[in-house]
Length: 130
Image (cartoon, rainbow, N blue to C red):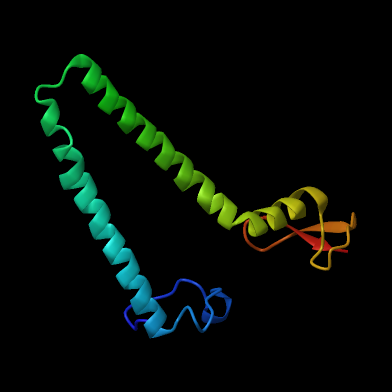
């Protein structure tokens, strides 16, 4: 990784493989995202507005058409940025939810024997196996 990038997580638990840290892979990913970023920028800033030139003065129906497209784009983006992270983290989410609702231990077996104890931090309660 770049020496200027500070990881928040401990190196061993970051989930990055040796391939993810390879400078060649990172350079390839940088070029990939930069190229697509420029293409999207040109499409949205130049080509999309150029599509409106043949229309001349916007009629009410033509304006409603563009409003419909922008609303559909917004809903599509909202769905994508909500659903993709949930799908990506589905394993972790299911582990947390099964731990919360089923009290499943790391070994996979259920246990109803839990003990609550007070910690030194302002009386917070931790749950431990008995």
